[in-house]
Image (cartoon, rainbow, N blue to C red; front, side):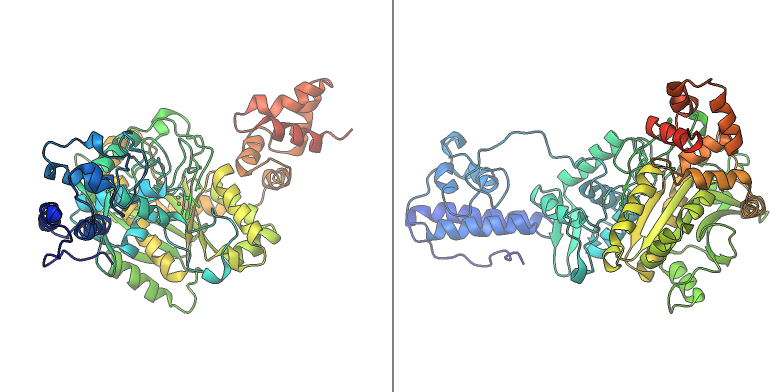
Length: 567
């Protein structure tokens, strides 16, 4: 805990230093009085250390250089106190750092620190800024972690690992993003106060957040999942990844992970290749798959009438599958928890595909339109089991074909607690980076409830922000009945479906590649005939699929040819 503001002066060892000591004492008190929440911990410590050092000094402190030589006094304190040494120049002081508590380093005059795009620090700064705009200037630690992860602006999970007994060997394992908070406080962007800890932005932090929003293309600072520059903000992804341009974390950034990505009205063609467990993702990071033409860059919208806003016309409802379980918790209790904590309506229905989705219900007509988001929820044990029996690929293929753009793969629990942890981690990475899902992670049932609540709020914000601009140019949302009929048809297994599953056993062939191939050649026979038309030109045959579809790379094209054309 940082030392409190000194209430009385200490005895000064040398009379010559009494004036400097008094200046530091008064500076500490005046700076603390100017900030309602008090001084940041690191600044309070730095001033206390300087005051103690001056009082105990055995040599006169006449210049900034003399002050800088005291133990524990860094460049920040020297800069703050420079006016206490009239006639002296900072040039007489030895090299020092710009931050409190650091000494002996050469002072750098670099550009102001701005967090890297889709880093944990980036997500935290923007989240604090958005909450400030909404009226919440100070956030508790867990509130900040939950909101930052739900924003989908980070490729990494924000929260610390709660499974201390079985941590992974890699520093990049889940739940490592919170460590950036130390850097944010040292850079004077975020202030940490009291116990339990609470956080808020400094003026410098607010300016940095505005820079992040401007550079990333997030026009609406209050809207959590409006992605314009990157699809990695929402933990929902259109098939994107979290780290790259066009990738998408949840709803908070350009990609609605590391840990989500909704395109906004300014979005062009968002295509991503990487992602956090959305790639943002738990969480981690996501990638955007090719969305097609510019007119399709917005997500599907429900019909718009006259000049009414989205919230005047529709109510967003979270729909949970009636087969989905939450451990010992009754479904009714889960519904009540989400509704009470987040103020969003929740309904239980039998979903033909997925474990959760969102509908926009017309307030007057009652018509229900399915919004462009769907969640497949897996705890780590179920995920491992589905990988072993190949249900995993079939389920993702059905999600790809359901017609909704933002595919969220929610992984519940710590992969390090199961025997096949590497298989689970690889599956999460592949699902997000190569297959365009937005992979999200949660600790357990209670965390999943919060995730659903944050996602719902973000989806509401996205449609509220983009409804007016996108309703006339975007695809039209399916009604719920249309969605059920379309999804039910997916239960019918066709020859093309079987062919796609066979192709997915080929190295480098993902769900997207398999669907691209079967859209051109629905059966093995049709593909074999196409190869035969090339009259034995081996190179042309190996490159045929690559040349026919941008979704098929050279390796996959060659491997599929080897599967079909056995010599």
